[in-house]
Amino acid sequence: MTTTFFKQAVAGLRVLLVLTVLLGVLYPAGVWAVSRLPGLQANAEAVDTTLVGVDREGDQWFHTRPSAATLPASGGSNKGELNPDYDAVISSRRATIAQREGVSQDRVPQDAVTASGSGLDPHISPAYAELQVPRVARASGVGEERVRELVAAHTAGFPGEPRVNVTALNRAIGSGAE
Image (cartoon, rainbow, N blue to C red; front, side, top):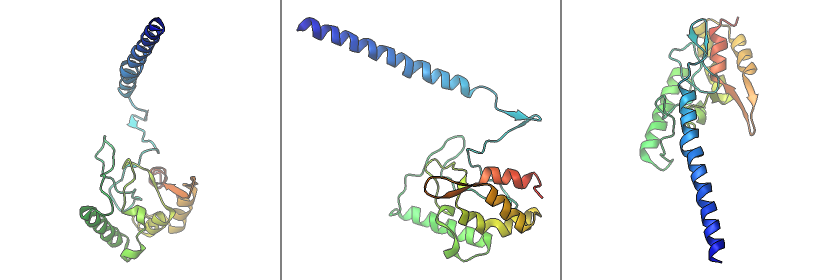
């Protein structure tokens, strides 16, 4: 019995050692090495991804959800709806967006004032995109009907509800999609 226990303990320690080296040393080193590779470039300019939402400055662009993160980090604020600081932030965001879009505060969708879990989500609801269409059309010079077509083209049905990819949509607006 002691021999069996000893053999199992040694086998367990070998597995622990191998997994520690693989998952605790080699995998993190590999991820670090890949992160140091140069990014994608086109015409000597960095190519942005449509998987990360980065809010652009200016009225000619659609805005993403707010973020509690500071790039390159990501993460939420960990404040809940019962936190008075959180309520103040939400109220402030709602007032700012309502003023920017020229609507009453009750028309501002929830995703316009709350951050995603990572704070880097590139998607917004169709309601938030629709709220921004008149401002973007006016500021970008692209016709309002064309902006609505671009919103529809960049709306995908995710499980649960459709979402608009703001990064891809802004790329289409920026390319002069007449």
